[in-house]
Length: 72
Image 1 (cartoon, helix red, strand yellow):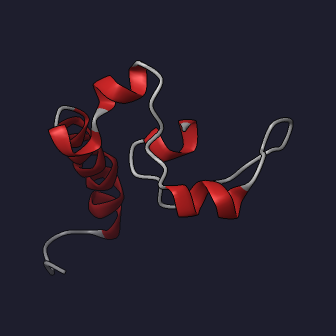
Image 2 (cartoon, helix red, strand yellow; image 1 turned 120 degrees about the vertical axis):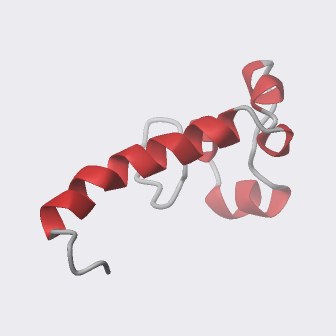
């Protein structure tokens, strides 16, 4: 931590940094957002098998990054 930066400054900077990262990843080929928008899932087979049906359930997906896995 920079001794000249207050805790409040870090709290203010945090969402900005995450927004910048999400924006960069949104447009990367790695995440295949276009495929997702056309019906593909971002989840792997093992994740789908472990998760099972979620229809009608309330979910909390920690560390989902920019939401693609949660929406999948």
